[in-house]
Image 1 (cartoon, rainbow, N blue to C red):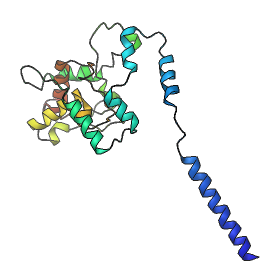
Image 2 (image 1 turned 45 degrees about the vertical axis):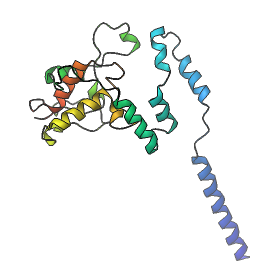
Image 3 (image 1 turned 90 degrees about the vertical axis):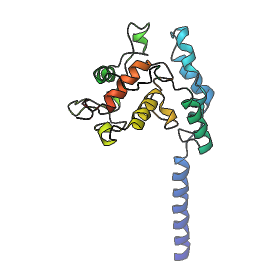
Image 4 (image 1 turned 180 degrees about the horizontal axis):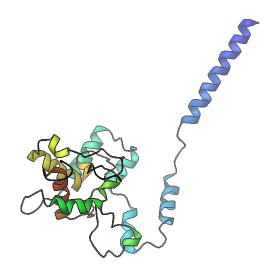
Length: 208
């Protein structure tokens, strides 16, 4: 009798474990319903906005692999995004850090309320990063950038790396959450150089 009770108990434990495992499995996703819901949420979108509803090759790959693409796909994303990067005609990758600070604080652009645009878009960098120790309002979804340039000895190679990441973050990290500011035309090349100066200039509050 005891053996029967133990057997039934083991079966109950196994059934509970199986039920829990099944409950944790993600439900099947109907991509057509998702696409329809996205389009339906933009009923008054101007014709100029419609192309933004269609993901490019990089976004399609990132969605397909839930932002963790296999190595071959990640390499293809990096190569494609690196090819999109454009540099200043004069070769100078660092602009004015004071202008960069203003851009970092500015969240204007690419919203319905900002269309048609009346001024340049901002980077809204503080929404994700800490850049100034004196600033009390900043996001934590991305790493703090305090002392970023100083920690890297203000090296020329690091300046270029920062420029590349701001212009197109997927060139450095495929399926990054950071916007592709340059590739998608959110910021101009001049604005990007100003942000590079904010991150890499010894005089910037980032490195003080």
